[in-house]
Image (cartoon, rainbow over all chains, first blue to last red):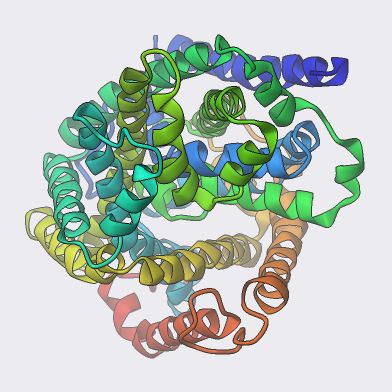
Length: 32
Length: 489
């Protein structure tokens, strides 16, 4: 895989998975 | 506001799991990976991210607000908001999803069937998977049986109510589904040659961003996947407590859905490219949703170490994804009946019985299934347009201020919502319908695109939508009175 592929993968996964985990944590905090 | 609903979600976590369960379905697993790979990989992902904000999230938030404010599902929410003469618009949204429910329970049945087949001796010989699939979908009684099993399970869950049924089930299904997807993805990336699959999924072909096809495929994927404009979020909105805010839930639902898609994409692309040489891998991806999932993947999994176990886990994940979406559809259909005056106890068996009967043609004949998937899948674009029209008629800025950014909302949404609902969603709808009809005329059925009884024709779409809209307009006064939708006129 090319460098641009690795970079895109890192950015997309960090954005989507990171965003999802952040939002889940926020939801849990709000619940408490 | 009508506060007659005493069956409400217990916790924010329960709402969240139910909403993610509604959104994550088979489309995340069997459609996203191949569409992303065929449309520029990383470039597609950028377009796909844009439409999370330019279609899915604004519509999801609109639906939450409609359900929570009006305390009605699609049967009466839009009529309640902007007047009884527009009530048919909401009913179209609900019935479009009901038509999807009729064949989606068939899909759920296929997934359950394949889970059990993968546990047994299954399809071990080369080429066996294809003949197995063809036998199964050509006048075979088994899809009918598993269609029934899926509906019985779904109706049983819904009959237990919002908290004991929907909330409790999704609290188990969704975390388990994510664990299964993580295990499948982790296994796939450790295969020799998996990097090539990652390359096809993530390497951006920037020139593809100039192609309208990439943008339209990305919009279609986002629209179908997140569950916006299905009427399902509207239904779940009815069961929010007054103090429950929903903007954070809407965002989390969309990000959760996209996360599941990426996990499935990694699992499938790595497996396909690890086992097959590139030309055959491309052929597998071009085999369509059912072809990739039910013909290619069973063969591919047989060829990796411990593949039988991972095949069973894959179909278990697919069954969970399908079931969590199916119960949302059954709940929405039940809500329509309840809004029309039925009790929940009598509505659930009625929904189950009607869904079984009207799903029979799809269970029996693959061509009928494909026709319904084409007509009502595109119908969801109409549903999105109708919801945006309702918001525009009410006043998009007023809708944002009075129905979304209420005193209970801790994370108000910005003015961009107003712009997207007023201008962007209607333009996207026009672009999508024009493009898909163009595909029918130029690619799918150049000779018979006008024919009302061809599977993928413009004619069949116009006929079925037209018949439904005509019936809804004729029955609108009766229906609006029945659900008390004159309020607010």
